[in-house]
Length: 325
Image (tube, rainbow, N blue to C red):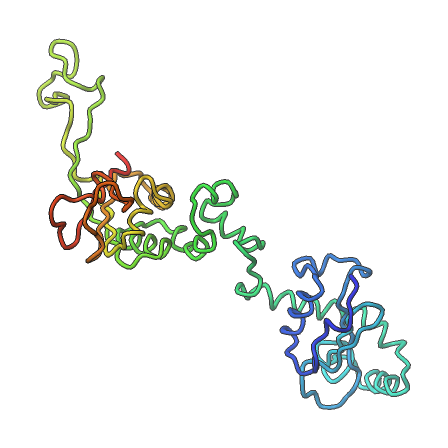
């Protein structure tokens, strides 16, 4: 990797060590994740030690460009200088060689100093997710977080049709066992940038009875008190909820209609975060003054049964959609 001098910022010696490496790596196009796996001729950044025994006042002693590589002289974490664990007579000898510009022993130890500084930077970066994060979660740690919540494959994430970066923020919640109504409402509100989302549990529904389980007098399922059920449906309150989204603008409501861009995304997202696949309805409630008078022949977005009202509409008109039976 060829590095020009213009890539090195002015007064680079005053930079923080980690900040300078981030800046230089991005400027030179260095793959930071593979920093330890690059062969020497592909490395664009080289760390060398400062054998001086003077008091250390900053992270960087000097920054130069030599042989198309950025050489960063460090006064810490090395086998030379004030932080070295070596005996003083070695350190004093290398400090004298520095003055005489004779770097034989220092250059040998820099083979190890370079690796030490590289490992230090990698360890620092590993535990700072906000730095190693890449767009749409393409970095290695984000991929592991996706796999933790069942989104390891790109095709699965794309099928949700929601912001993948937001899904990363839900990793801890989605990995847990519980799915309370309040938690689900909060996830939906955050994912789709909504201000008022509520879930009403214990909604009434009629569940169809499979034909093989229906009563057939004289043939099957006719024992009173055991398997006799009259009718083709049974009432149920435990398997359905209603998702209510309130205070919607006209444009936002149309996006959640079956013809809108967010309808399938909402359906897929709710199906993903549900532990058990319940039946559910979607209630869309408009905010105040969001419905205009209907005029035939004009393209005002009047959808029959959804956004069309005869006479004066209510203050907060709503529509109900069946999402999953």
